[in-house]
Amino acid sequence: MLLVLFLLVLCLLWALVEPHIITLRRDELAYPALPPGLEGLKIAFVSDLHCDSRMARWRVERAAEKLARLAPDVVILGGDYANTQEGAALCFDALAGLRPKHGVYAVPGNHDARYQGLAGLLEQHGITPLVNDCARIETEAGTLALAGLDDFLTGSPDPQRALAQAEGADALLLIAHNPLGIAPAAPYLPAGSVAYALCGHTHGGQVTIFGLWGPLSERFCPAYAPLWAAEGGVPTLYSNGLGTTAIPLRFFALPQIHLLTLVSAEKQG
Image 1 (cartoon, rainbow, N blue to C red):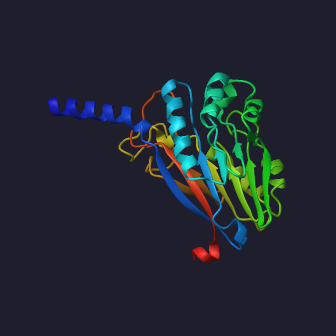
Image 2 (cartoon, rainbow, N blue to C red):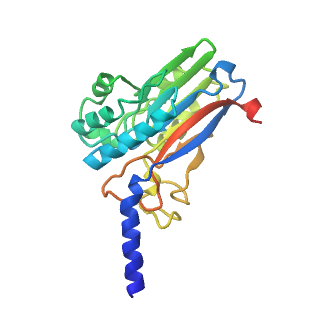
Image 3 (tube, helix red, strand yellow):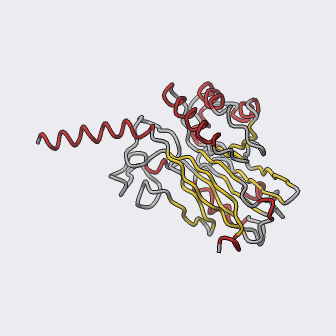
């Protein structure tokens, strides 16, 4: 009995500590015939910041410092910044040290529907909102298109509008807070394009049964393992995200930030 009690206390302590262990995942995104000038372009991605407490803001600041040291060329934010406009403003203040060459871009999440003025708040902080919109990063060597969708649960995703502006890009990223928005968008991908999708929302289950199953998760087992899955034929990143919601705990669902590097499929092969 004492052993069981000891193990339960140990698990609770770990669940309290785990939200502050920020892990970095690195991935290469391979595109056929990628122009040499886009080879090696670095993209930072972070989702589910949930900046609703002093501790959460400290976590966001640490994540931003860690990403800044990696010197990404582009930063993408995957939604769920806070439950209030004040919390969202604190979140974006905490990210102010990120000054990538090609800018910071953001999609909304379901928690961001709880307050008004997200787009204006993003713009005030020098962040480009992508709500059924596409940003084209034009370089002398080629074009990277970032197509962002409105939230699947609380918004009105319009992939046709967002992806119409991605025509002719050398590399394409589809960004949506909720992975459920990716498969419906797949038919609107420009013909012949190769795309990857970046998503959050699930928190990797946040509190899992030793990483084998997440009662709160919307993804396949194992619940916490970093996962790329094909949604409508589009390779889709299910990020564990950075923050927590409902309870300030994580268990075998470590917080994640991401560094993605563009590479040529020919060179990778």
